[in-house]
Length: 401
Ligand SMILES: [Zn+2]
Image (cartoon, rainbow, N blue to C red; front, side, top):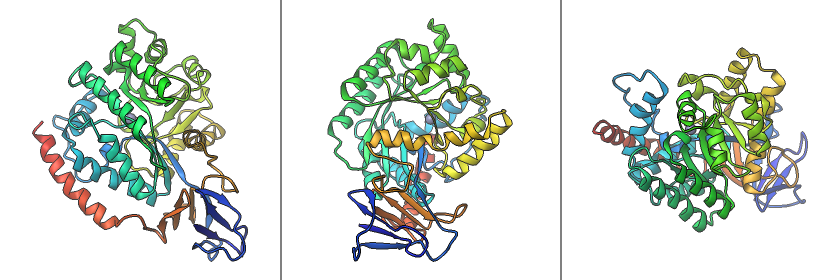
């Protein structure tokens, strides 16, 4: 049990069965002092609604692609689709450990991951899930089925990995999704199978949609107005599915996504970095959460990028601020918990700290994972050293591909 001790300034909270409760007098447990500095706030942990733990080593000296990519597809082909093919179990584990440790140290308590490692498909979701469970962070995982390397067989193996995970996972902090890479790298059969599997297993589908115009052009060539219409026509997006990006959706398409109960996830830093554009119509849905798309899970930095880019594109402060809380509703739906508030009965996923400074304490599902700014569920120096080592050999394998 964790007790958030705020006796002098306001209510104290204890955790009971992973949710917050009012403490009883004399209750014993780990006491986290958050009353000695009046600037300290207790707030809900942040949610990263779309990311890629497989790219967690990229900040550790990944060599620049040569020749330098000039468009989105070249970025995928020369960087991420080479990195993912070079991954094995050990490098994936090191990558996930580093990315998730950094996430909790930054106050992010739930992450929604979209995974691909074409040379290590079977069992890959267990690697991610085990790391999340060890470090004590909430995670949704799904293998992004695709046909881009080895055709239909590859997609079937990706979907089978999702099914294997969904039917075997019993972890407390991890949930599963059925995932597709994107409309433009899958056939009709694969998209249909993903939708059918998700409905059968009562799981969401997690997929990139209209991130770049290449996805829209591909869907048009196949006879659809766009990738959203194609995936809906193939029944690949059951209600509650997670649609990343939507940069090139019209207001009408965004409204349709909301009407179909689809979560959209905006990734401001990634969209800016990849030069794919700004999702100018995304305001037409109230179901828009914030993700980092593989950038570090510091949601305050991502929120700052959202405000900067949103204002530059004429969005209102109110609309942008509403987007900062949607992730809690999405995560709450995934875990069957109330999130986004710090009161009795809400998930005990809380961050204690001074706004604008790194968190002092982080509690997830009642467990103290960061105390006085230090990771409690692993040795961060060791995690970083192992990540550096794994990164060096990953860059070597990548250069040979
Ligand atoms: Zn992504």
